[in-house]
Image 1 (cartoon, one colour):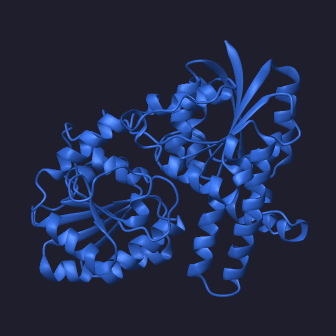
Image 2: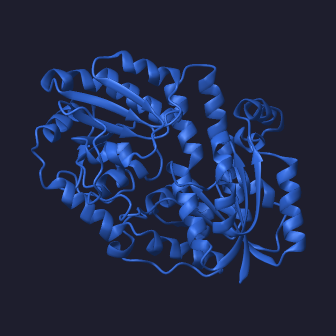
Amino acid sequence: MDELLYLVHRIPYPPNKGDKIRSFHLLKHLAQSYKVHVGAFIDDAGDWQYAQALAKLAGGEVKLLPLNPRLATLKSAIGLLTGEPLSVPYYRDRRMQAWVDAMLATKPIARALVYSSSMAQYLMQHHTIQRVIDFVDIDSDKWRQYAGKKSWPMSWVYQREARTLFDYERRVTHEFAAAAFVSDAEAALFKKLAPDCTDKVFGFSNGVDTDYFSPGHAFASPYPMDERAIVFTGAMDYWANVDAVTWFAREIFPGIKRAHPAAHFYIVGSRPTAEVQALAHANGVRVTGAVPDTRPYMAHAAVAVAPLRIARGIQNKVLEAMAMAKPTVVSEQALEGIEATPGKEILLATDAAAFAAQVNYAIAGQAPEMGAAARERVVSDYSWAGHLRIVEQLLRGSAPVAMDASAHAHAA
């Protein structure tokens, strides 16, 4: 069996949050054809328990290093002196570099996949292997969006990160054999921003495990019988999610609560920040923190929401809610890259008033067929196996075969 090096900024196991869902399924797919050697960081002490399961799945050697977010943030300040994007020194570790160098010197590794731009630094000097990077999102553009939401001096820091990280993303793309993004739309934007990289840029969508995320499972309801639950799922220390639930709780939900007194807004996700926890003081808002399984919360909700105002790429939370046959209300940003028909398979809102109206519409039971249509869309267009074939082609050095809309609808 051929051997492959896989570098990931966060341990790709278990698939319990956005970035780990994609990195896990990439590993699961690659392990069918390769003995995979994995190098990754652990920023959550609870993830050490998964080291053995990760090694079993990968089949090769595994190098896991602890990453202390506070110390890494201090270390990232080096970028201000070197001109680098701050996220590169954040993930720089001599031990990881030594392991990568040793693996390439002693193992018959001809191919490497890098997940996220911050891990590309470990392969920049290794030119003899086939290197492919999955950027996932255009992270530099996320920093540009963040800058618009912050006041000085953080707006300056974020603007600088957007500029320096984009330069780095473009340099990595030139250096590597191919670069992938989470959708055709994301890939098209990068090509527009960096036309000199066009021939190396491809898109492949996230998928959904539609057996796991299925309305066919019988879950006990986590909600009181007299409530009509509105649910948001996601990592609640991620600023885009914090911004989304704060906006919804403060600007949108009060009107919904007046129209539907039984409505309650559930924020379901790990590591809620102090700002998120404070939202629980509002009438009808519940903050759960980490839960063993998000599916019961989706299965028994009246409606799922994704009120993101800052976003790049495809939102797993939206696809998962659709797979659970749940009416889902999304912002334009949250719908980006998802081929769902507004009004038929999903409810789209362009501002706070429209968002409230769409949630009220769903709570009132006026979209009875939407859940089934949403699940049908996900089942037909969001297969992991179908999308991940592109990665295999890139690693083998062949250009991916173009797919038609029905086979590749969500790489867009």
